[in-house]
Image (cartoon, rainbow, N blue to C red; front, side, top):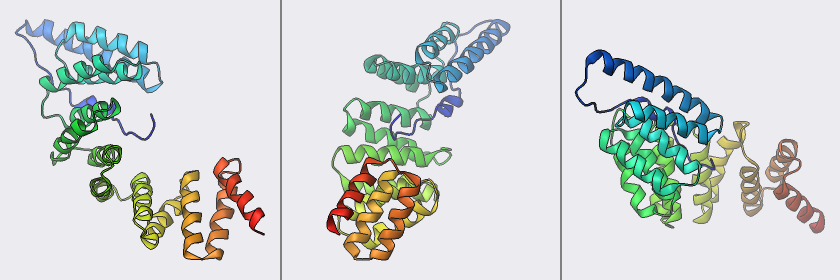
Length: 252
C-alpha cells in the first residue's frame, strides 16, 4: 500500500442513517450488515479485495447508507482499480457521516492517489481539526506526502512535524523530515532525525543510504563506516548498498 496510511478500522465509528422501519426488523438488518462488514474487513486485510467488495455490497443491501460500509467499499474499489466508483462511494459515506475524521482522511488519500493532490488537503485538514480523532498522525503523514506531490516542501515539513508531535515514535515522519533537512542543506538536523530511526532497529535501506551520505558530507569517516557496517548486516543484498560498496572500492 506504498507509504500511505489508511485505517481500515477507520470505518469503526459506524455512523449511518436509517429509514423508519419496524425496530425488530431494523435491528436484525443492522446485525446482519455488521456481520457482513466484519467479513469484508477480514477479506480486505488479507488482500482479497474483490471478495471484500462483494461482502460490502451485501451489507449495503441491508443498510444502504451505512458510512463505515461505504467507506470500506471505496477502499476495496480503489484496490481494484476503480477510482471513480471509489470516489462516489466515499462521497456517499461522507454524506452519511460528514464529521467522521477517518472518512475525511481516506477521501483525502483517495483524491491524492488519483492525481487530485490540491483537492485532497482540505480533507486532511478537516480530519486533523477533530480533537477526538484517534489517529491524527495518519492524516498528517498523508497530508505531508501529498504536499510533496505538489512540490510544497515547507507545507510538507509542517505536516510531518505535526505527525511527529502526535506520535513521537513515528519513524516515517523522522525519515521524511531528514530528507527535507538534507534538501535545504541542514545535515546536522538530518543526522539527528536519522539517529533515532537507525537506533530503532526498524530503519529501511534508504535510511542507511541517507545516513551514510550525510556522514560523507560532514567528513566523519568513523561514523560513516559504522553506519555502513550496520547497513551491510541489515540489508546485505540492497542495490543501494552494493553501489556504495563499489564506490568505496574504487576510491581506495
